[in-house]
Image (cartoon, rainbow, N blue to C red; front, side, top):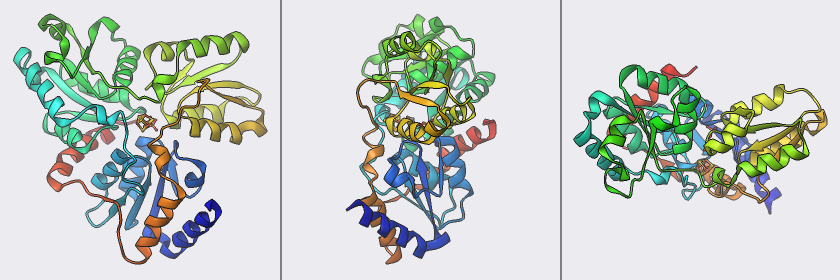
Length: 352
Ligand code: 13P
Ligand code: SF4
């Protein structure tokens, strides 16, 4: 049973003491999230992984997050993902072969090393971060995307942004880049399905990727809600569509969403466009202050891969450590890790 499992986790954690640190992303289910030593958004957890002294970093989140923990931690530290099937559907929308092909094709039309900076959202495989490291590029998260794009535009004229078109578009637009100067690269077509002129005129080339959880939120959900509660505030994650973000009063990372609601006046009402586990947690937490928290979609939409991390897997990975077995270790090959670290370090240096 779950309670039994929770007892096992608590016992194993106590036995391992400071040898282990558990990092929990805000989208984790409550039964797991309660055991996190540190919680946060992708940026905060990356920093936490880099600063940790623990021998084992158990990442309750998704695969790319555990990879980042491995890349930023010391060689003797081990990053563990309790369930190997916890991937990220968006991260899977960009792979090295397709990105290299895009880079080659851009090279035929432009001089990519002179004109284009590759920027990868942290929601991507380690080999894509390495690609960015190799080509003068950088990583971003949803909380530093503006600072990162500014860094990129200070160097080269254009940006190739992958895998999330929405974060790229929403961030570019918030910096004053008009939509006409952004194009979508369809990675299933030669030259992204674009003409030479379109590529030459673009400032941001957006990879055609998206988050299947956030794409469930629609502008009509906001309209209906505001008709009913005209004084309510709408807050969304930048992985939402342009239209949803434009209709929102606030847009930002999971950490930003939490902070904004925490600092809001008691009695306020919020419509939140991000993953259900976080929204439910906010609702529970703030009901005593009279803050009403509503989920943006009328249908239940959760990140099913975040949800794969369950108490059973967490207990199993901790208990194995007690018996000296490291299960589900995430290890990025050193050559790849070195280049990925370069792109991640650039990001950490420009992050506010
Ligand atoms: P945050 O960095 O805002 O936590 O986002 C991570 C993520 O995967 C959102 O879908
Ligand atoms: Fe990936 Fe979307 Fe899940 Fe975030 S919510 S981990 S972007 S699939």
